[in-house]
Amino acid sequence: MDIFTQALLGSAIAQLGAKKSEIKIATFIGCIAGILADADIFIQSINDPLLFLDYHRHFTHAIAFIPIGALIGALVCWPFVRKNINFSRLYFFAFLGYLLSGVLDAFTGFGTHLLLPFSDVRIAANLISIIDPIFTLSLFVGVIGNIKFRSKKITIYSLIFCVAYLATANVQQSRATNIQSEIAKKRGHIIEKSIVKPTLGNIVLWRSVYLYKDKYYIDAIRVGLANDKIYQGETVKSALPTINFSTIDNASQLYQDIMRFQTFTNNYIALDPRDQSILGDIRYSMLPTSANPLWGIVINPNKTDEHVSYLTMRKYDTQLRQQYISMVLGKDLNQ
Image 1 (cartoon, rainbow, N blue to C red):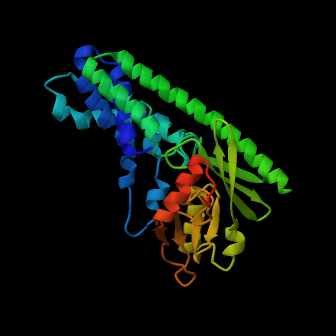
Image 2: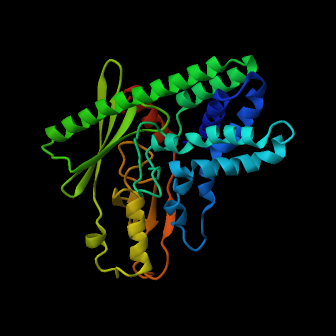
Image 3: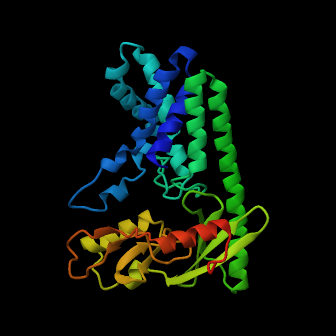
């Protein structure tokens, strides 16, 4: 999730192991340790734009890396707290702060290498957006409340709420998945593979993407308390490297980069409807009904020996914002 939420979660977990006299220092150490897993964002290369995708939520998020990550966190914090705490206690708080960083990211949609080095599988529960104000606010209230009143119960209650929120998200996802199946059935489609993921900042509106034959069908599904609503979206032809890029030498750098991008997207790739030279990640778009990807790579058959360029396409205007809000609220788009 976002770095602020990771910091709050690290602080909250560290507070659980602290005495009343240690609340502030545990909060600080947990905060620093909680964000360290995301230091993998600095693994980048000017010459290889896709390197950061290869290591996005990689070894620093693995469960096996927790003791090492905690040690790094402790060493980072040591110069600031050494006069107030011994190193073993410092490491304990850093361990708690780092403990759930990777696990939290696994509840989002990007995919997290939790099981490295034993498995390279990306785990993505697709239960919560990378930014969710309700989840984050709950952690904030717990952490600040504990600092102010020195009551561990406040932190515990906030964490219980977060667990309940994720459980609710799981129910919402199941409901949206069932609706997705009904949509496909009404269209006479047999789903070959699918994904249902929450849209930004909520667990009410979900993006539905499924593959039938050689096309991705995209819809927005609002799962409300009283009634559900479906917003029919766009359709886009799926991309297959062996078919769409059959003329590109398999040994070339270009083709290898295409395969790397395919792996990152879990094979959810399609050519951008706006520009057929861009291979996009169909899992994400500015609108949950749109086939226009948020990011992609530029395919240039004339530069097979060079790394691809990576593009982000986050154009968000007033009209898109109004459409999105209307779907979250369950309104008709013509209102």
